Image (cartoon, rainbow, N blue to C red; front, side, top):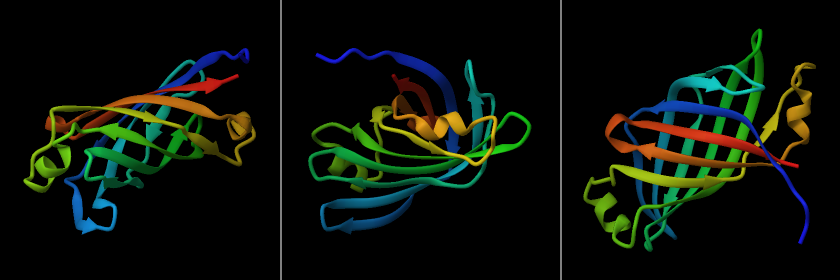
Amino acid sequence: MFDYDLEHILSYTVTLDAPEVVGPVPGGVRANFYTTGGEVNGPKLQGKVRPVGGDWLTLRTDGVAILDVRATLEVGEGALVDVAFTGVGDLGVDGYERFLGGELPPTVALRVAPRFLTAHPDFVWLNRLQCLGIGEVDSENSRVGWDVYAVH
């Protein structure tokens, strides 16, 4: 077994617009959730999530959502940090049918693998990280919260 440590680097929340449902596609149903903004807080990063980006989600017929997320963080004195990740969310065995009927569960647990890119000299250390993220969707309030940990 390999030694590793997890370091909490940030938490963030975003608000989302109503989903743009593309509809049934090969492999599931496609829905795009666009970010309207948010906040970044953590021991190493504070700032905001800019109102760009979103989640280009594919919900499989087994109720598992495949996430494809992009966001821009603005931290420190205006440094821009690109964050991209993939991961999964489980809407339950009947999640696909319920989503097609316009229904989302009140909460959905999310597990992701974020990566960061920036050119700002104060934050280039982010470019070297592989992270794990644990999040949850609050469907009723159109919010998503994340805790992000660097794997060392």
